[in-house]
Amino acid sequence: MSLVGIVGGLGPESTIDYYRRIIALWQHEDAHSYPAIMIDSLDVNHGIELVRHDREGLIEYMLASVERLARAGCDFGAFAANTPHLVFDDVAARSPIPLLSIVAACADEAQRRGFSRVGLLGTGFTMEAGFYPRTFGNAGITVVVPEAHARAWLHERYLGELLKGDFRADTRDAVRALIHQLRTEHDVAAIVLAGTELPLLLETATTAGLPLLDSTELHVRTIVQRLRADVAHA
Image (cartoon, rainbow, N blue to C red; front, top):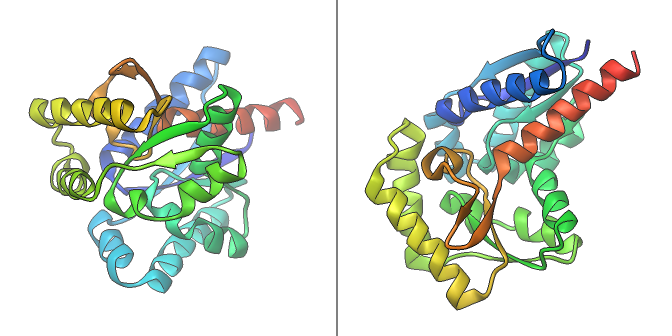
């Protein structure tokens, strides 16, 4: 059986969610076995500081984790978070094992479902970076983000609450209102939850009449498909 290496801890709650979901999806296919998973848990606070101030340091931090997983025998890897995908291409180019992108998984699903215009929610780092618009644009899909003040509000709540496992009703209601605003003002067909804590906050597949593309779910699906394909070819 292949071994997947998860770069986790960014943040802890969503890493736990990845672990549970990988097992659940695997057992949906085969209730008599469990997948082989290894997690290298990083320091989310240090990671955020690197995102803010040191892109090269972030590359080295993520690459060191991937290399530890490779030395431990992992056959492929994945980052259990969206924001570190700021440097995904840089890390993947130097990685000793293949890496599965959460952004590519979301773009593939949006294209499969025929969405041409989607809203994007996540940390301010993710919403203001180019890696989602670039990947989705290659698939012919336009990405829309909230206005600057709404991005700043969500970013503050994300770092101050969600990354700490603090999921509040008032934050949930405000995020739902933000989704409604994206629908009415920007005519988006779906919302990409490009933050792996957002599905834990919203706990639903639709909001304001819009389908939610759960980046954790789609990434986990890709990981399990890869694991099962390796089993099938063993």
